[in-house]
Image (cartoon, rainbow, N blue to C red; front, top):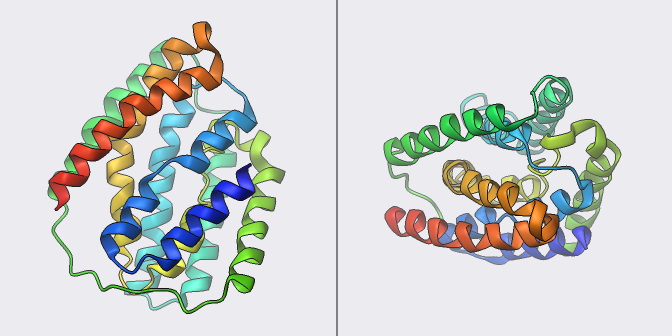
Length: 229
């Protein structure tokens, strides 16, 4: 299921020419949902903290490529390595329990709103992929293989491991704010989704809690995306 979800979403990003649509497809947490189900662990503060590590990933790729002129493939690989190192290092350090979870939400949502409101509008160039699917699939499978190897060690940092963002970074290499800006939206929209999931999981199970979380996530996404137009 995870392979199918990631492959389809990557292809949507690759073949969507408009930066607006690329950004939307990058924002949909479909692989996130699949990985949460795959790992099967309760939602806690580490899942929220992973949003900051994802922010580090997207900004490191952007800065390495745009500012330091590192080749995009090397910049992406470095970004993935940074995420893995931070995630593995912090997986056992972030405390579980209600208080850390609520504190993480209280920090992340205002930070996301601030980044979302302060980000200046960038000129983004339309681009449709010229890379054949036969070359995309090995890259997707390689990153999936890395995640499946590390998912239990990454714990709560596994769901936001950059899967779609790896191909997304390559496909938005001409305008990497298209890759970076959706993280600001996720920092606002994912915590309410996970709050609902955490509160309803005891009654409805993890799958049911995530489904109810999506009901909360989509209106927030709509409002934030409309504000960007």
